[in-house]
Length: 145
Image (cartoon, rainbow, N blue to C red):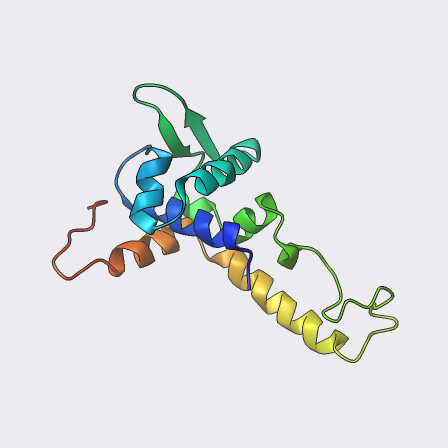
């Protein structure tokens, strides 16, 4: 399971990506995806430092994606927000676990972790946008159309 901040970022930025707007206020994104606004603001700051979003203060300001939603993956969010999944480590926490001397879970976890990383690397904010707007009540228009 990914850390909560990655889930919040994926939901909020997926909403932004599918909204049809080039930028949006943090509080607007937070309200749309039911995420605490102050916490999302801190997440956005981290993502801005890593170059995934840009921010502008003041009238007409807000958060914008730094590149196309097709080119920002869940892996990028995990990396920017220091999710443990991107750190190579033993599933059981054994310090000296390696390919040469693997713990009982090593072969399983190596394969499973690789599958997870592949999924994260191919799943984009565009996919999150599709999810965000597909779950709207019937009859609600896709804002990006």
